[in-house]
Image (cartoon, rainbow, N blue to C red; front, side):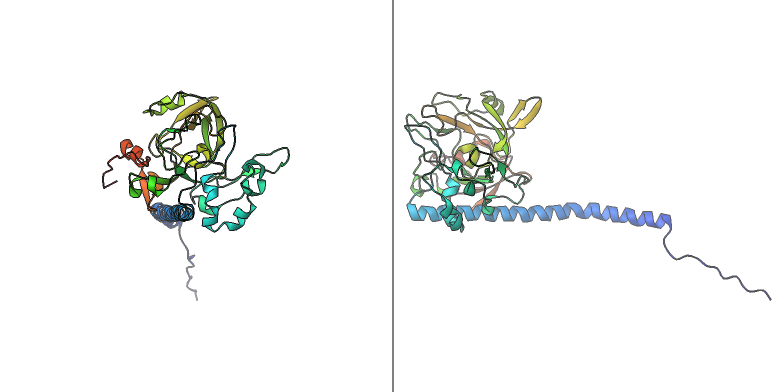
Length: 337
């Protein structure tokens, strides 16, 4: 008697079936990944806007207490000096009273390592890729470090301050300023207060040109780069305690994310510019092109003096961007901007 042979077939996928499944999964991932990334970016941008609102509210509360905004630096006029920043003055209004208590306002910030290297979360954008301290060892403090920030104050269009004539620029604040809401003649909804910048940005400094008052605002980035200066590779906007414009301010010389390309040792850098650092001299005026930049695609978030936060695109008309940077230029700004 012959027994029937039982066919044993392995259950499972063939190679072709596995390849088909892998291909389908790859397609789904390719379709879903952009949506996930977009959702994450939207969350980061919302968090960034909330930070700007908090800093703007702190600025308003400071004004309520002192009837003026924090100065863009308090400098001596008889000798070079350093100054604590606009942002440092806002700390008590950002629930940072503990950090504020550590500060001795009568002593230069460069001697207070227990303050300089502290990370202030409200001053940092979630999209910042360099959320880290910048070591700056000193003979008396080998562990001294600074911490960067992303939200800086509007210091005008191009000309910042002249220590000889005491003439000031057009921004919301400037060195030794005492400006308040009363000085925002263009309207609080038509004047920039704060904008985002990138930390560890390279910059040119102390070339001492232009040196004459009345130098026209450059129209091309190459014109600024041509002024030259001492090149600093990665230390711009790395010191939230320093009031100088390349650390705690921005200008509207050029629109958001405009590149100022400078070549050093065969490498190209997108730089900022400070003709003469505030407080480093009592004779030279300061001109600056410090651009609002962000890692958010297409533009930068910024707050207006009224406390509202908007996203300004890279394509904004430069005339309008200039107008938003002045506190009393009497420019007419279209209602759709």
